Image (cartoon, rainbow, N blue to C red; front, side, top):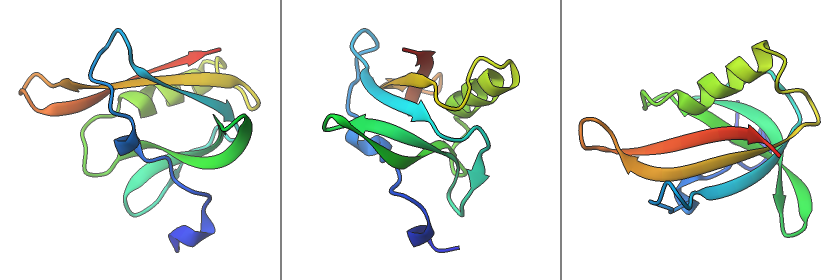
Length: 113
């Protein structure tokens, strides 16, 4: 499948916070609970609140090249436990940190607004 068949993808690189006390906060609205895979990642379709309006976007939950499954696990657990439902407004807080191996890692926290 061509990426042009999808809405725009959220680009994690634009979120630069390195402070866990002041993470970047992204407001999303749940459009789908089911994830889907592309060549590069496991994703979900949602809406993001930007420029005072909701826009459809694809949120990459886990890159195939990364072992970091934190956001995917939070999403899956929230759906299974009926905590996340279609139409819910959520926040994704994210910041860059160091892993146990002293490598850069993106940390995520998924919560309801």
